[in-house]
Image (tube, rainbow, N blue to C red):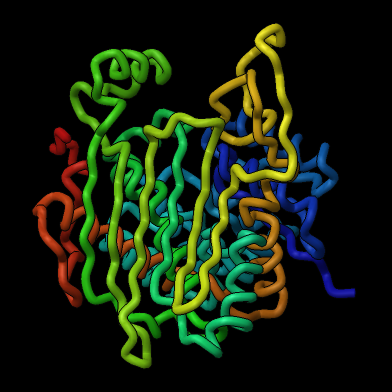
Length: 411
């Protein structure tokens, strides 16, 4: 039997906790090591891996030390966006210095804060023999994958390829203060979540086996706004929630974004992506929606249309939590429950794909070239929103940094 893949986690926050939880459903891998600038977080992640039976992880004091661990074969990066370039630089320096025996590196979305940084990390990783995977979980969601398979097998060969994909991700706001910082995160909800929606929609519009570069972007039109979190009472609430680290009265980020992206298929057909994201959505919890429309057919996915619900009367009172669904906004009433969030959201299938690709020595289907392509569209979205016009492609955005990321946007 081939040796299982030893995974080293760079970062030990919310995202890597989801990744570790998903490994319960992934074969041929184990959690080998963890590095986090906050050692207590690393200890918690290692303890979680142990409790779940997916690895007895060693805790390391640096990324380089993690790489030199003989049990670590691949890295999963989920650090704050403002550290991505430095993290990849350290990885590449270590590999070129002969340390460790890494096979590949997987990086959480978005690949970087802007196009210049995305180009830099791709250039760095491709200066080594390392394989690279882009951790975009929504293109691995079972409902999206299955829906796409049915549409492209049963409908598209008869009626023609689909022409419109809609995708949305909405919730009431991020977990950690750094997500709210335009400078650290690279923007607001557009950078944080429209990366998901655009790539899920692009995936649905792409034919099975078709090159990811086959769909050519023609133009982008976008809008951003702060609808909720710059209202005075919510400025104060956000200050309180973040321990004073976030002041949207001084430097806000957008909490709503929408984009329309026009693309051209290899056969000349015009395609359209409509993406909407929000940190100002108040409902049961995180909501993911996707639609695919074509001549004579359509499909829909909604994460809150669950097969399990519970009802709790007003006499049932307890502490606030997220034990029913991520970003839960209520503890009472008729509540949807997602029984296996890592699987439903695509993390299990995503990590299974990355592990299998790395063990086979082949490039993952979703890789850093996709992360770069997504970043380019996101930057065009910001430019369109700032200038109030449609951005035609091709366009050069290598020097563009959104006003939100510079701290000069005021909504």
